[in-house]
Length: 142
Image (cartoon, rainbow, N blue to C red; front, side):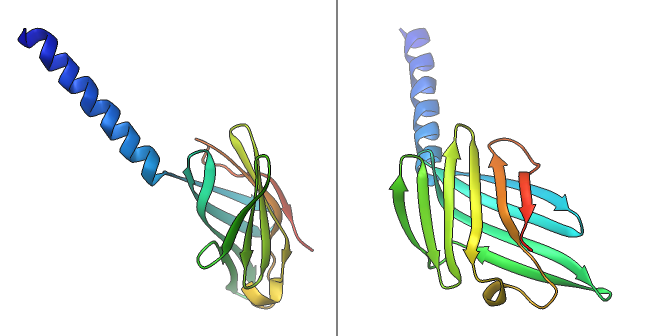
């Protein structure tokens, strides 16, 4: 009797742990360098969608580093289509499209002047693949 009960109890414990982890989401991070710009993206994924994100770009200029930051803090989030989300920030809209295990972040509607210093740039698009530490498909905005 105990042999049956103990494995069952452990299985319930693992299922509960996984459910709690899914409810909180899983955090992923990726980085990439494109020309002189370094990109850093952190995303929390919950139920297959982006729950929160934080993006930073760093550009060297005159012996210093100018940085830009865009995140979902205070943003109005909406589902705008199958696999597509919108985050309306004070600096503009970020559109996220899910393509299987990849999330494509579109920053083309962000006002660079609202999030960056002089001589800085951000990504027009940057892609995070779940489980990868390297961001891909990075295109810098001019």
